[in-house]
Length: 497
Image (tube, rainbow, N blue to C red):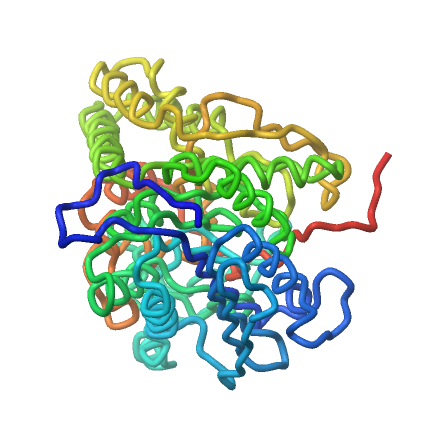
C-alpha cells in the first residue's frame, strides 16, 4: 500500500504511531442540491452508479481505502466502504437521512473511518458547496421578538444599485458600523454547509478519541468554492497537516480527479502530505483544462503556517487602524481613499450578483491586498506590516488559470498573478453601504444568543477592528440577502467559441 509522510513530523507516540497506508474519507452533503445529486446526466440513478462512487472505486484500485458519506437529494444518506485494492468488495449501507450540517455527523463519520483503518493516514475530502467564512448560528434565537428588538426595528426588502437589499428601519448602528445585535432575518436555505466553527469542532471531536487518538488528518481537500479562506484555514489548522482549496469558484467534477491523484501516489510508493496536497490542486487544474472555459485557481498550505499568517494579518490591521485614527480629521478621507484604492487594485473573488471579479465583491485575495499596501503612502508601519504579510503568504498558490468562464461568456477570469494565496472576507469594500449577509455575525467578537460561538481568528486579530474603523463614517444602507453560490458545475455540454 502507498504511504503518506507528514510534512510536519508527528509528535512522539507509541510504537507503530506512524501511519501505514492511506484512507480517503469523503463527505458529500448533496441533500439540498438536485444537480450534484444527479451529476452528470441529470437523472436519478442508484447510488452504486453515481459518478462519485464510480470514481471512488478507481481510488481503491490505487491501494487506498475509501470511506464516504454521501447524502443525496430526495434520497437517503449512504455509507460507502471500499477496501484498498478490492473494489469488488464495496459495501453500501443506507443510514436513512443524516443532518449533514451537524458537526456530530462529520465527527462520527471520521471516527468510524479511523476505526476501520486505524493504522492509515486519513485524508478528508469535503465535497459540495462552500462560501469561505460561515457563522455558527442558533436559529432558535432568530425569533421575531429578537430580530425586531421587541418591535422597535423594521426590516423591508428594497433595491439598491439594481441589487435586492434588506435595509434596517432603525439606526441601531454603534459607531457607524453594521453591528446589528439582532442578526439578520434572512439566512441561506440553499446548500448551507457546516459553519466554520462547526467544521473545526467536528475535527476536534473526531481526532480526540478512538483509535489513533491525537493523530492529525494528513490533508483536507476543500473541493468546493471559496474555502481557501484565511478564516477557515486558521480555524482548522490544529487538526490537519496540509490543506488544499480554491480561492474563487471551483467547478464540480464528481470526484473525477481523485483516481489520478492516488495513482500518482501508487506509482511513487510514498509521498509527503505537501506533495499530495499539490497533486490534488494540479489534478483539478488538469482535468478542467481538458475542457475550455473552466478557469479556477488553487492553493495548498501547510497548516502550521496559519498562526504566523494570522499574526501578520493582525499586525497589518492594527497598522491600518492606527493610520485611520491617527490622521487629522481633514486628512482622514485621504487615508480612507488610499485603503479603498488598494482594495480595488487587489484581486477580488466573486460574491456579488454578477460574475465579474472586481469590487464590490466582498472576498479579497490577502496576498494581493498586501502587495498593494506595500506602497501605502503616509505610514511606514502599514508598509512594513504589509511586506511581512506578503512574505508569510509566499509559495501557497499552486496554479491560476485565465479564461472566459462558461457561466459568464462576456468576461475573463484571470488568476495568472503570482501574488495570490487565499481570500479574506472584506465586506462592503468600496463603502457603498451594502453589506454581505454574514457581516452582523462577522463583526461580533463576543458570542451572542444568535451566534453562540465565534472563531478565534475574529477574536484574536484586529481585522474586525479595521473593518469597523474603515467604515466608521460610511452610511449603512442595508444587508445583501443571503445565498450560498449554487453554481458552477463541470458542464460537459456547453462549448463556447
